[in-house]
Image 1 (cartoon, rainbow, N blue to C red):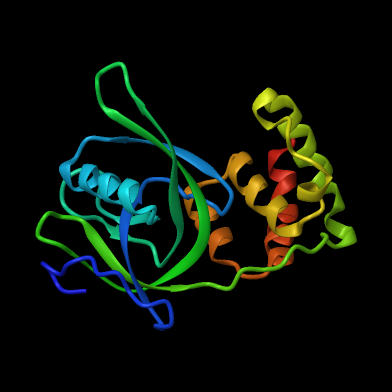
Image 2 (image 1 turned 180 degrees about the vertical axis):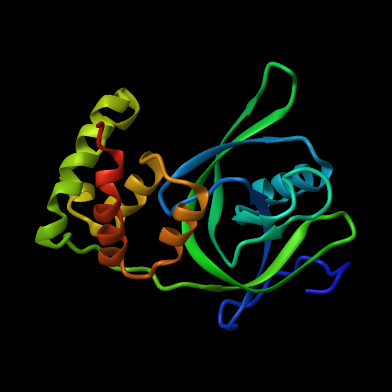
Length: 209
């Protein structure tokens, strides 16, 4: 995407689509939520457009650069974000809550004149719900305990979610004390069972000595 390019609405049958990006120092997973404080004009304009059209934008972990200022270099895989709530902070800034939807791979990207990064992305395959393998059943129990301790906000989680290998993996990737590069590696895995295996192998590191 060349500098100064507009943000076109792409046909759904194209191999890639144009998606504006919001590079962050965090990883958003499908089904997860994150709150953002918006104050730079490029992102205020992005939020306004997405609010009017119902379109989403992409969130990618920052590979190089910062969240504020010059356009940051995004990681190669990110998650589509859809705005689900608005608020105003005590200091008068706009705060939004977004929810993660589809994953995508960045094929190419560049910055518009206003500094907004726009990427040509390929949507990654979505895995149909499937139960975890027997050797990963402990992870569903662990996640249920974590969510129970998290309080009322997560009380609506039911057996269907806790029986889906992909959902278990995404939520544990959010809640376990992982580094961002580890979270990014988990996001990039297509196989939900491989993701659970990677988490199982990390569990001993979280046990109190």
